[in-house]
Image 1 (cartoon, rainbow, N blue to C red):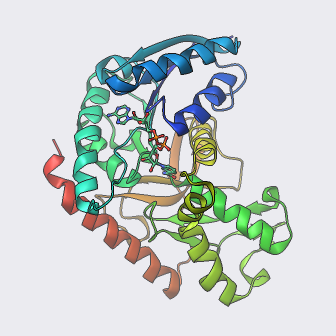
Image 2: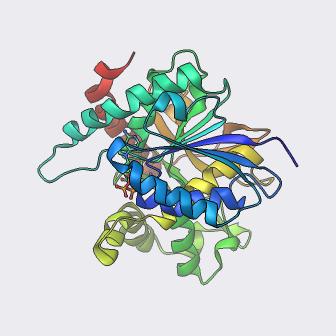
Amino acid sequence: MKKPVKVAVTGAAGQIGYALLFRIAAGDMLGPDQPVDLHLLEITPALGALEGVTMELNDCAFPLLNKIVQTDDPNVAFKDCDYALLVGAMPRKQGMERKDLLSANGGIFGPQGKAINDHASRDVKVLVVGNPANTNALIAQQNAPDLDPKCFTAMVRLDHNRAMSQLAEKTGAHNTDIKNVIIWGNHSATQYPDIHHATVKGKDAKPQVDEAWYTDTFIPDVQQRGAAIIKARGASSAASAASAAIDHMRSWALGTPEGEWVSMGIPSDGSYGIEPGVIYGYPCTCKDGKYEIVQGLEINEFSRGKMDATDAELREERAAVEHLFA
Ligand code: NAI
């Protein structure tokens, strides 16, 4: 058996946390031979609920769960951590402007970024799930000057999985027949779900669906899926978000299959005309614990417009939080 790795999860007593922790402890994220220490961070009023979650984790008697740390102190939570899943965030309240939401979250992700900078492993893998995920990831990254900026990522994998599922349904295929969809940009309604490079059962996906379905149904449905879940369930996506977080980290840590990519929100580096300075959804391959942007994909005029629109939104978000950078 390998040496345990430390996995920090924030917002651990929340609904995504409840769907996530048991799967991490069961080995779904890092594999069946990788023991884990769970470092669970919550705000002080939620420590009682966190104790209940910890009791349940213990009651599962998971073979891979080595140790649980419960805390309301980010410096303790991120101490020596190898993986950090930043789920806890300030929810949008009625009447709150997006700008206020961004600032309120800056108050969380700035200090957490600093605590990661000061205490985490030097090649920590950070995934931000808490919304607005891309810009929260940017705030954390900008408060961690001693770490490689590439340590910080944001989750667009749920959107990626939603796109796969919808394309499978439309073409009468199974999810496993769908490869290489892309979510470009922000985890928001401006994201661009792109199937120009996707395949269904090994054949180009695009000719298998009609253009009107692609532009008028598929794209808005993927963009608005979160709202549709809230409407149907009376609560936001939790188990599917947790599952996507597991997928994101597993791909990053254990690699992507040959010839396949996944979508990850990562620091832009100029690829595909997206200037550095934002955390942008890109197609990525992963190997040996590192990710790389898939290069050389042809971008048509339709895609260009959508990719630039979501970039513009991310740059607006950035401008609203720049004062929070270290
Ligand atoms: P929730 O409200 O059930 O749980 C959030 C938890 O975070 C609460 O237990 C709260 O006490 C905790 N928390 C708040 N501030 C904290 C801090 N400073 N440190 C540590 N913990 C803190 O919310 P839920 O449903 O678990 O969602 C969490 C976040 O994930 C939300 O921001 C939501 O919008 C986002 N989300 C992102 C998705 C994505 O695809 N990127 C998909 C679905 C949700």
